[in-house]
Length: 218
Image 1: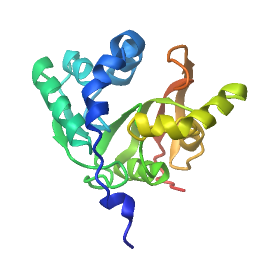
Image 2 (image 1 turned 135 degrees about the vertical axis):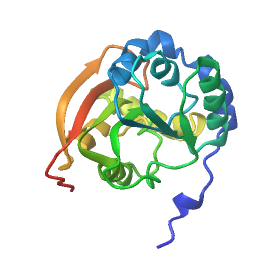
Image 3 (image 1 turned 60 degrees about the vertical axis):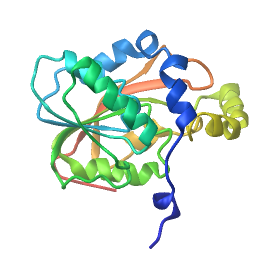
């Protein structure tokens, strides 16, 4: 069946141009990106690489890995390619979407997801794809902002229509962690709310899921 979301181009030139200036990534997320990229091995897939925020941390790692990344926005992807060259990160960077990963079943050891599920058009389908490409026993490592509680959640709901237009489709109100931990294909290894971020894109949660060896999928 034809899906209009798959045919729509993802391109946010203004967001791409200002992202690294507006978001103090190293100040806010350095420790958490080190968490995501620590002790990587095998074939690693970074979904929604953006402007390449993980690339410097991967490049600093001492272990050799087969590092691949996808980014559907051509403006973000161009900046990511430049950053990879600048920091000496060897990465195969492709134009693809998380809802339709161009990788074989059970072919990836680790998937990295950092501040990306907020922008994916069909997050449930994307999570199915992550479960498909991960090897049994493989990891999904994530750093994501999620829906808040109480008055902050109300504020997010009010701000979300404007925010999503200004921030390249980012959604403030997603229950991303609930989606992750309730999925039958994954077992929770680690889960932690971290004390960084600026409202309304808070709270931020990081963690690790492991694909069950029995291969169960919802």
